[in-house]
Image (cartoon, rainbow, N blue to C red; front, top):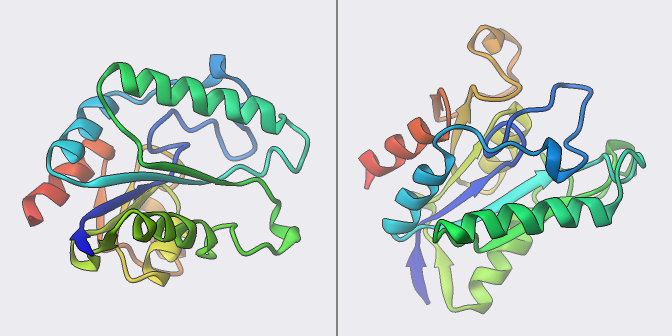
Length: 189
């Protein structure tokens, strides 16, 4: 198996505008790419990284939006990225609420396990020295650390630097946004 670097990304607050603590992106019209996302993803791809999106989307279980609406948002997001010659290797969502106690809801690692299993089935082996989880919440950082990944907390979504005293775990790195996170990664290879 070929060892490769993999970058796992949360969606809301990392790729698209964070909708707010009690809000959800319910339709494509509410989905807005953050500035610099496409060029940051292109840089990762150009440098040989596989890219996966790993996101909790409990709005489905809460019946705030349908799974069909979530799939439409994903389809449009991927189409927009493809137009820019960006390939996302997989998108994995947990559509459950916390009370459902499923294995896929971050900070549990079920979604990561699915993505890693897909990589393995394609003949790749995740290189933990070159693999990262980038998210905008401490939950994302906990998920990445639970699988031995390097972690980068971006401040383009939920968490802010002034909240550091409340963090249960510390990220390996912090960045203003995905573009800055990608620069950190590329400086390490």
